[in-house]
Length: 238
Figure 1: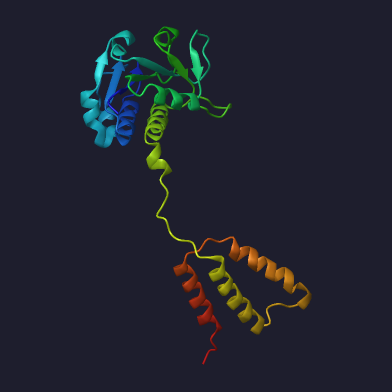
Figure 2 (figure 1 turned 180 degrees about the vertical axis):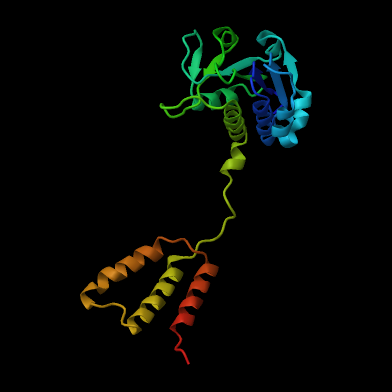
């Protein structure tokens, strides 16, 4: 994940930077760059909100301007809460994932603007792409650290797709023959208890039972447990 860098332009709150560092560490990112913070960096709020990620804060590099902060990257993707009137390609999340896969061998910088105002057109001029995180139309502004968290997760998910698509332990599903045996046992017990009354509704009641059991995908052990439960319930009390 070292080929990715997170560039925070003129952040206003120390606690936001701390929370950003924590999210970055959650997903294995280490490279944090800060341009002209609006406070003495790092302050006590940065440290308190970074929790176990203060090592990222200690290694973070501070720059006086955006141009210096982006120099090591091949591709810059800027985050914006709204579509901007600049000559840049605006992309959606699905495009973002495709770009990550297409530029696996490139150094990619993710640029985030100040909490109150967002990136300026000058900042955006250094971008290859402008990415807008989809939100409700009624409230589009996302907290800086939340935006970083979403992007960290999207990158992690895209580049670790196999771990997300792994199936659980392959448990053998019981055959319909075995399920049928348990269903027959159940219906026999229900007959003895005069469950199927009135008689004219018996067929529809059976149909509901069949629908319930045959859509399940139990394994042999689960069927044995169910059969044992039915057997225990069917015994007469002494």
